[in-house]
Length: 397
Image (cartoon, rainbow, N blue to C red):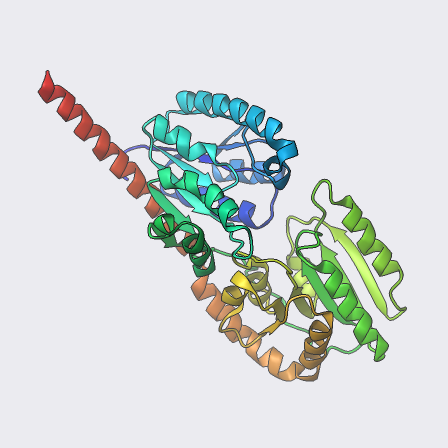
């Protein structure tokens, strides 16, 4: 772009999990392109400081953020009230910011494509969610608002296929932009020999769907055969899921003496934990649109075990140091942990090649440029449309 341009970015939260990190990279790409970037989020959190460090402005404002509780009959009243308040808030922000384009991050904030269309501003939707096993009608309802966007990006071919199943018309307009995953500049190599306790790492939300309990169960199975295993869980629970955190701690307390479980909590920087690990496990029970954590393990020179499902297949494909296990089977995780220790020399020999391939596929620079290119295209198309409208109005006078 040769003239100053403004992008309003809408995002549903301010944490530093998968979609939040991708939002950060998208904003970085837009700022690098010379855009004025204004990000609106409904809550405070660690993402805000990172966005401001990139040069973006941040506005904390009310927004409708869809959740399962709002979609149940008991939540419909709140859904209506949140929608009304969200529309008013979004309308005021657009009037104040006067953006050339609106970038909508995730499908959980469905009002933004509608409001952008009503204000005559091109929108770019970036879809980070995909549940092929979910209700098709519900998926269709979640995707429909994004038909109003001029550009629709998805983070994987799996996400694209999920949209195609629910709403073929939208899928035909989507473009796959592989996630740009930031890794350590100089990752620590794996230790020479996994003597002593095997160091196993889980990174992500502590929720039933993510399956951290399966990692503890796998460690317990290895302990029955005399192996010592240290499990580190990096992450925290969603609000309302504290009960699951309690269950995990009870499970850890009841584990055999050879099993140690450390609850590290949420960590904005995970690389010291990756460096201390021998193996990373990504045991999701439910569909994942992609699998950033699997790629992070590869970038950190660590073997990774992933559930053989959905976007995790795509994220782990082609890496000699990645292994897949059936969903919800801790015995399979335990077997692969054992196999990795028994073939440690081969694993160590392959980690550098796997990292090089991950750097090629998921370079943050490529991701930033791709997102920026799509937003710039939306800005140009919006400018051309407004110019054409002005000419037609002038000729009719």
